[in-house]
Length: 436
Image (cartoon, rainbow, N blue to C red; front, side, top):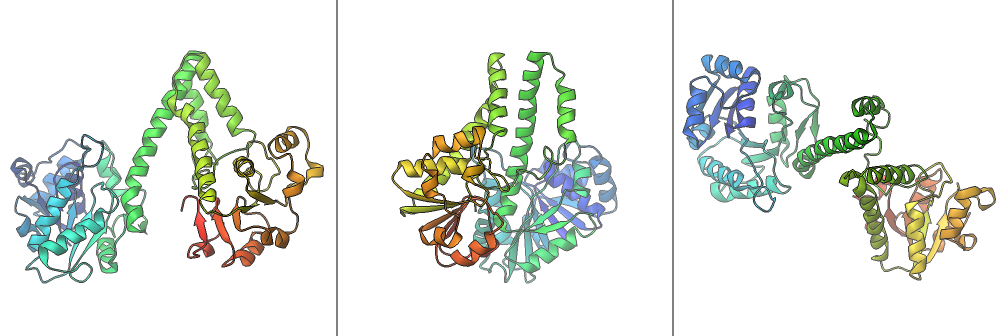
């Protein structure tokens, strides 16, 4: 395919060379004459493993060239890929000026182009950029999005030092657009890369890079906090973290990564508090570890406000234990919310098949009665009675009878969902999820 790359910096230079390696014809576009001359002389614009040889080889075979002329590049290609930088401004926002400037140039350039044109965005951009680019191009060209051109969000996942390897071996290839024709064109661009192509909503495509990199930063900083604690205790942090990452069932896995309600139970709160105390006792500053419980409490407060803002007085909790399949109520976030609602004068009813007052014992029983001393009056064992006695159902656990609950409340009761109990509710006007 014939492709123009806008921006010959890090992402653009790698894309230029690697797409040529896949057999496409490339025109690089940049306002920097020096970068354009480097490419036309068969030299890379960046220092990166393997890219020098790739640029030289594909320039020699005439698969790549560069220009400062946007109109020429658009005229002679079917796809434009935007790869310009989006640095932070003084307030921390991304500087989108280069993105919007290039969008204007492309809009001007496709005025007299008869063929359908696809614009892919590889740059890291703020959510809403895909739509904004389409608006700019429509305004400049007089043409219509989807009918005459389209914008495809296609974030890159390149690491400096391994960018060429990452280009040919990405974790996945993400595509998002209002145009199926544009998606199909970009699928052909990447058809010789052995990677799953995942079609997602535009918002997801625009946000995934921020999530990835923020989490990568979190991992580095988390490991370093553990390292400082270990050093103060004369423990080998490398051995400890090598052991930590060997657990691919929980530690390095998909576990715990589904947005939902806050954590609770007897282990997480206790051990986190203890580790923070160890850190404090050894005069080690660990702001990430210190902030975890704060973040968890903010999420509990968010759930409380979500329920309160429904302006209904009778609240039903479907589930109360801190997770499915247990009667452990210690530090259950749902119990905390129920306690606060009762304290504010709300009527509260609870249905949880795992909780049998006569079978509770020890600290678990003491914790429950300390928080909800009148639990016997608000705990109900009949689902229909429970549903009829409340105005809002707060789904805390999925439980064995969740399908029965779904059938009874769908379209009849307001639902606040803390666990994403079912996709059936997503278009239901009386439904609200805590994180979706």
